[in-house]
Amino acid sequence: MKKLIQGFILYTLLMGASCSKKSDATGTGNLPPYVPPTSHPPVDSGWAFESTPVFSEEFNYTGLPDPNKWGYDLGGTGWGNHELENYTNSINNASVANGVLSIKAINESSGGMNYSSARLLSKGTGDFLYGRVEVCAKLPTGKGAWPAIWMLPSGTWAYGNWPASGEIDIMEQVGFDPFNIHFSAHTKAFNWVLNTQKTSIVNIPSATSAFHKYRLDWTPYALRGYYDDVLIFTFVNDGNGFQDWPFDKPFHLLLNLAIGGDWGGQQGVDNSIFPISMDVDYVRIYKIIR
Image (cartoon, rainbow, N blue to C red):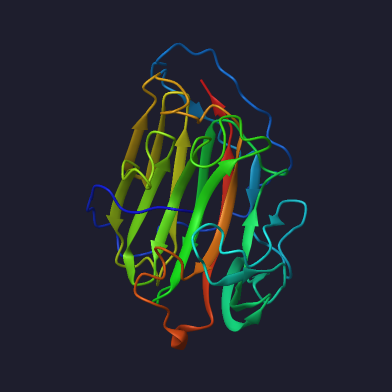
């Protein structure tokens, strides 16, 4: 989760919540890979998406996140970004109630770190190649918070370690700048280390007080990012190989709330904000079709 900012697209979205739960969406399990014929570079073939999700989580229960849909990354390693939290699988850090998943960060001694939190992933249950991802979420605020809705490769990283095999950040926010929301993609050629990452930034004044829909449309032709169904990010496959476009292998989804770190901790950590949470109303993944 290593990113800095390049480029700035400022678009003010509606102040109110724009995503709401629809309890009839169902689905779970491994997503069947879809491998369409491609050329180099591919053309935009008018890709569409199925109307029923092949992976969905409506959080219509109480307790820990459904283990048939979610796993955890665990530990307090700093995660390559000098983060300050220890990720746990405790109900204190990831719990479901009233139709919402809360990923909570707490100021407490945990695993040798000063904060505990959670990092959920759909790896092994919701891996997919191409499709639409929709996550409806309300974000935390306060110096030190660093929540993300993002994607990493599943299985063997075919093109090598980060960033060669790719990363997609559907939503990223830092608590010291809570209303500027980032959509980014990282590859070997385009990444924060080289200051060449592909990034769009949108201002959402109600990001921390209302639920908003964060969406990715992933096709062989492009990554397209939408906030509340407004297109704010486009990254087109130029056909120059994996250095530019490693997004032709299965990925999985991650939901986490980091504390501190190279970006989230740039202005320090305000201990008065805790506990804080990223709240998720639903997660839906749709299969690509022509």
